[in-house]
Length: 149
Image (cartoon, one colour):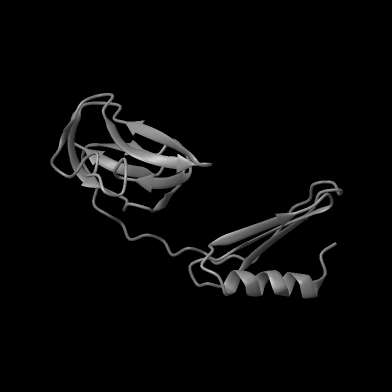
């Protein structure tokens, strides 16, 4: 079991760093600390030797997004969690920009997941009407990346 002093040290390390989260585990315990929007750590602790039990971690409720007008067109969504890159390399131009015409199968971005660069392609032809994420953003599974009209 991780003692409170060690836990406080982990929280201090997270608060003093630019990391968004850290996870530490050994044979018996696992702990994950993450910075939510308000920069107060969220703690999830599990004892891997014990039977699974309901866990509760202090979390802040995200504010409800404002109702946006219904967007027209289709979206290209992220097939995985990772880091979004709009170009093949930092010094290269973006794969696509607003107003660009894409055909089914065209590469529109790269998502880095577990040190692997995954090319994301358009699933249908159309014109890029909106880029919904910025270069270097962490994206979630099924998060809209582009809107196509």
